[in-house]
Length: 280
Image (cartoon, rainbow, N blue to C red; front, side, top):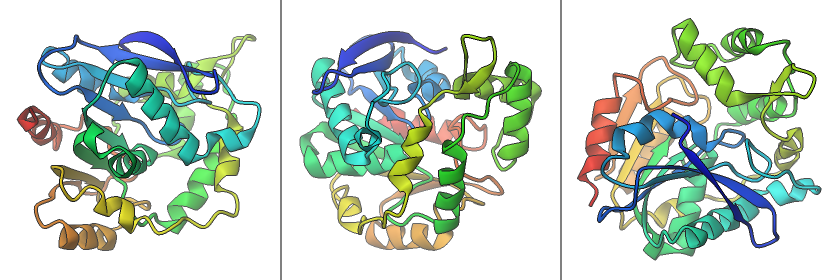
């Protein structure tokens, strides 16, 4: 489910792991952009549903997953990550894509539309918008700043179940799969978070800029918003303001689910897949 992995180089030489499913066809590729400390592996189930009809690519950002770690935490800032995504598209010869963006990935999708409008054919924003909930950011900052080392994968799954109870995962197997996407085995056999905790420093004391102009960059592309009904990152009020500016925006809501939907929930997966399938 994790796809083939290809390594490409960022402009500064750091290695970026890119997960790839399917083959290049006449249809527009899917470019899947994960959350702040997530990896391209999060899109494995979505990719398998579409890889027979179009190429699917999903990078691990620098500092996450199988990609290189940076010496300077400033390298993890969003603007540098946006440059990395552009480098990935250039290296893989992806001049145009349907972009699926979860959390930070959705902000990067907006940034791509502003910086390289010809690249973006359509966008799905997963539980993110141009205003980000402060309480949600406080939790994210604290969570990603730790290694959360566990003795084995089962304990890692239990830790995530206790720490992130608002996710849509229900079975032990789902939590174990999520843990395997979140943790990596250390040389001593224990399991630790699969990201550089220094990424948390990118959130220290920073006031988010006005992101509404970036949302405006999506005005000419098909747009789908997926929202967790209990999200502390994307509020119902912000979603309403987004709809006011984009009355044609499609929206899927998962009641009672927090940040962020997995995109494979049976309540939304058929509609999401239909939207993706409708893109040329």
